[in-house]
Image (cartoon, rainbow, N blue to C red; front, side, top):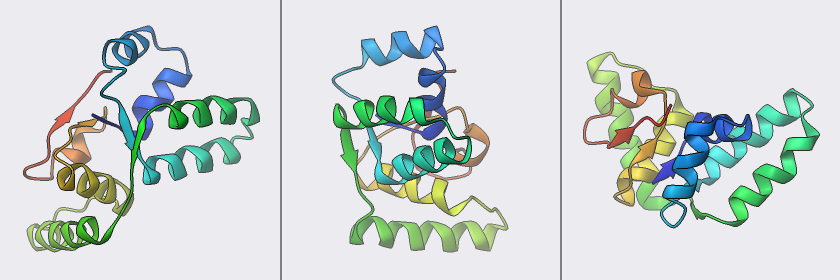
Length: 127
């Protein structure tokens, strides 16, 4: 289960439903280096220094997937397919989706609008 940036953000804001899901699935949780970058960027832009240690703690205790050569190939194929369909998905979201597909993982995100455009991707919302 790859936690998307929005799901981790809900957790950081104290969303009780998300917190319960984190506890229930604690041994299955994962995320990506892309999500880590998005979170750090967002926190630095908002000057939320107090949340950086919480993000670090989360990422120290879950599996982290990276954007490797196989994932890059999947990204390229998906981006070309989506372009031909006239359907745009932000590159960061497409990178996260590519990592999930390369590792047979489900993306946990409330962003069903974007992730739902990617054929073959398993997406689940906890929000």
